[in-house]
Image (cartoon, rainbow, N blue to C red; front, side, top):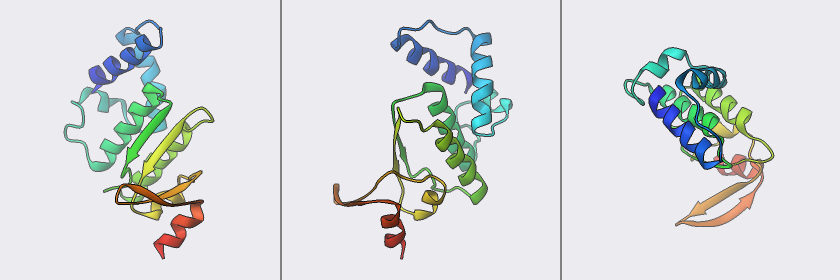
Amino acid sequence: NRDFLRSSFNTARKHRGLSELDPIEFLEVIKSKLDIVKMEQTFLNRCVNEGFSGGEKKRNEILQMALLEPWVSILDETDSGLDIDALRVVASGVNKLLTSETSIVLITHYQRLLDYIIPSYVHVMRDGRIVKTGSKELALELEK
């Protein structure tokens, strides 16, 4: 997992015109990012998602987001298979990474995630088309 993350991180840095970080420098960067998703440093020693629970996989995805700092992230069914504690950790990580300069397209079938991540807009899709747009209240209305 550490090699995958460092390779991805350095590729993003290179794309931005920055120099690559060596393993020691990268370790310092990733330590602070691990705190965002409440992951232990031992996760870095495992293969990517090997033996990870559903919550650990999702937290690893948010860790990747924290490292790569994309302008746009697409999170598809981020709440799928998460217990309430893991959902809170993942949502907290997403909220910490959302800035005025980043956007997240969050795809979910359930309103529960939106109790922790407050959307700017809610879009309802049917047959691949947006059929309705509104605020968080639209998601609450649909849940009924």
